[in-house]
Image (cartoon, rainbow, N blue to C red; front, top):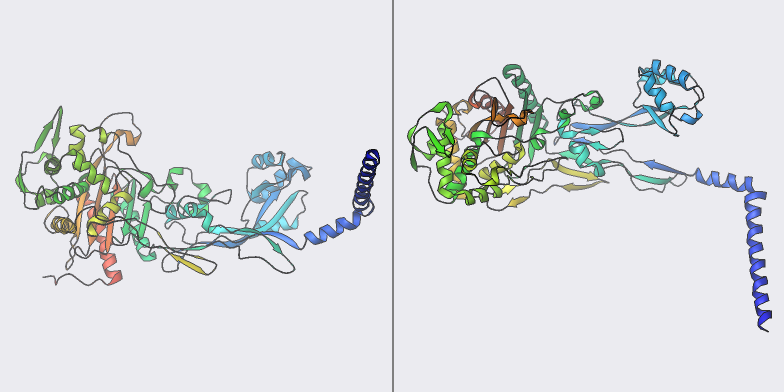
Length: 551
């Protein structure tokens, strides 16, 4: 009985298997052509598509990055029979190196791109000839209508069709189009286009900032320079300019890749006397001194085997803390730091954000842990009090002074105002990262002291009749190591800068002007007048009412 059941199951399995095999023979062999045609016909109803990359705009709607239709040329190496001859023909038409094309034709691959975004003439000539294994295809290419403007902020699209640097890099996943299968008969597909991005940058202010940097190159022979304009209450970046810059439409022609770097957030520097305002903020906030506190300057300080001097070895005698900022007295900054002690000084620098990135929404932000400074040597704290031996990025400095202008509240700087995707809008909300770095009273006291720097001190050239501006100058020597020289100490080259905000007692704009090695001795004659030009332009552009009637 058991044997009969086993045999029955075995026969059923054989019959079932035979049925499946016969069906496969029928489909794959007998009716092969029919089903192949059906499959191909069905496949032709579908297509893998990729949406357009999102566009990038200034806050007012002026286009910074868009897409244009164009053609690109590629080859299928295995189909090209006469490789050397084909390479020669393409070289003559496209103006490319023959050996580079020949090398691609010898590769074991099915696809090698030869050139993208062909010119009309190249399209015409290539369309008139028939080269085996050479193909033209239409696609979208990235175009930057503003050319050089805001180039380090925008970035560009690299060879792998991915965003590199700046907005293009940081927001690549948001901007790039989505790949989806589209039904060509029914059109059943979701929107595949990337999101559009509107920046906080104001076209008019950005244009002026870049124009001033070009002027600084002509008049002061600066090696590099940056101008940043920020709303200190929200953190919105209104202008972010770098010199030198580049045209992202032709990024492949750039020889020095350092030019792609956004030095506002990707290069460290020592701020010099600008930093005296930060030191004074900590001492005021700890109530260890007031703007009227006095000390006696003897022209130098001896710390261990080091001697610290004032600029030009000046001796100032008895001076108030306000005068320390006005005259930019190094020994006065050391005095202020010593009133609170090294531990508390470090705590304030941390609260101001100097040991961490700001979180600005741009690719590649760096920061310094300042390990050398944090070793705790007495001389390190002394020099740091007036901005030497401590390093940071310009955007960190802008954020910190934003807290002074914003009643002690530290806000995150940001550059994207809104993102629009599939008709839905996402707007960036200002973010307070630290509620109270210093008290509002300290902020008011320091603002008055910095206003006195402009009214009575080293920044008199900043004065604009009718307006109160709070600011501070800074000149710092550049270390040899920064210049690529394996040598201790400082060179004769300098960073010269000025940072300020206005209207001083109701700030709406904060500006940093920083120049690398201008031909002037101090920032009083370099960054200060350029700050004034930028501030005057903003006052006129926004028709800001005066604080008082000028005499």
